[in-house]
Amino acid sequence: MDISEQTFLILSALADQPRHGYAVVTEVDQMTDGRIRLRAGTLYGALDRLVAQGLIAPDHDEVEKGRLRRFYKLTDAGADAIRAESRRMADAVRLAEERLNKRAARNAPRLGTIG
Amino acid sequence: MSPGMSTLERRYRRLLRLLPAAHRTARGEELLGLLLDLDHGRRHPSRHETLNIIALAIRLRLTTPVTTTALTTGLSALLVAAGTQPAGQTLDLFTGAVLATDMPTIIASWPQIVVLGLLPLAPLIAWLCGAARTALTLQAIFLTATVGWFVIDGFNGAGMGTNLGQQLFAFAVPASILVLLVIAGRERWTAPRPRLFWWALVPLGILAWKGTGEWGRHGVYVLDAVPTVLGILAAATAAVVAAFVVRRHRPAVIVGVGLTGFLAGWLIPDPLLVNTAMRHFDGQPLPLAILITVIATTITGINHLARRHKPEVRLLPPMDP
Image (tube, rainbow over all chains, first blue to last red; front, side, top):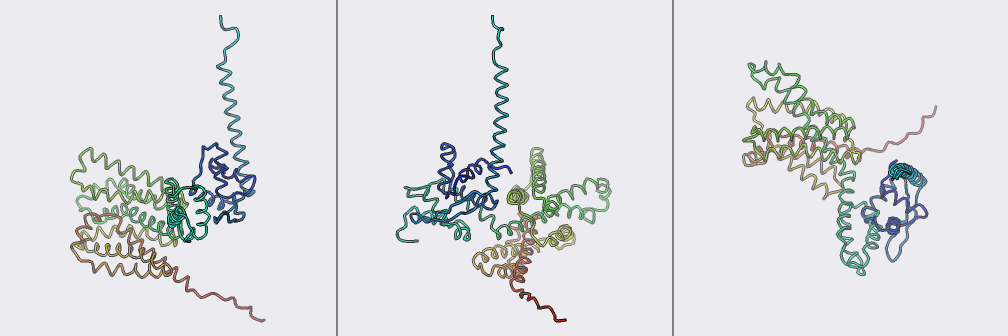
């Protein structure tokens, strides 16, 4: 299953431990150095969809400072999805680096051709 | 709302009323907590979050079971009305619309005429077979071709004297079908049930359009049907509004108000509304689509009522040998 970058980051944020919505937003912000900042509505919709797809599941609820915090955890299916996407991206990175190395080799000056 | 609530929380609670009630009850506090965490220190909701919540509310409301049923019923009705019109008019062409002296010309080019008459049925057939994306592709092709012809006619001067308002109104139906098919493909909607009802509307729709041609020729001008159509339109609107107001008895309201549309049509004064309506509705598929929607909604309402009042089937103990 192909997953978007946003989905990949949300699943990765839940990979090591259950987190609530605000913690997921903070984690994704840190993982991307501030490049991606999830909005509440976007995250809410994504969490809904990922629960329906079975990639994450509600873990437990807590009340902190009068605010309800629902914690989500990664399921086995979600972990498999991250692993598959990571492998796909790693293969793409390896192929790109091979081609860049070939390009560098082609453009490098040849010995004994100057003078 | 408690008195110790902050201004920001009060404003966000008001914003969250845009969400469907079921989502608000189940997840409202969770979303509110997230919004307050993200906008900590503000007095007003941020513009980005506000727009995001509005977009979320629209998406959630479009995908509730009631909205999905209403939109798929409306889409199917539009597809039937618009898709069967060319076929009905083609049938009418070969069965009385043309003078006997002109028939040889028509018969000579019958393959092209028949193909052009049947092609617009393709999106409807694809939709009823469950291929929403195929229906979308076909509809996009037909709309592009129709708009292209209109533009070319405009440049050639062939469209002189055309009522622009009526022409734009005519494009509203295929454009609405296209938009609804885009949503249907994205949300994986299917044609509503009962499927036999919708399949039966294909030949009936063709005959209905054939019938409008006969009416015009035999002196029963379509003008007489317009007050009924307007009455049905008013009743359909009233049914939707009443259904929102009286939620618990929605099927009964839809059935009751839908059927009164036929009676209300005879009470609307003529010719004041007739002339206004004829300018826009003459030869348009929208009135037939509305009629089909009201009939389909009435059938859905009757099904719901019958299911609600069905007595439970008790399992009888096996008879002793």
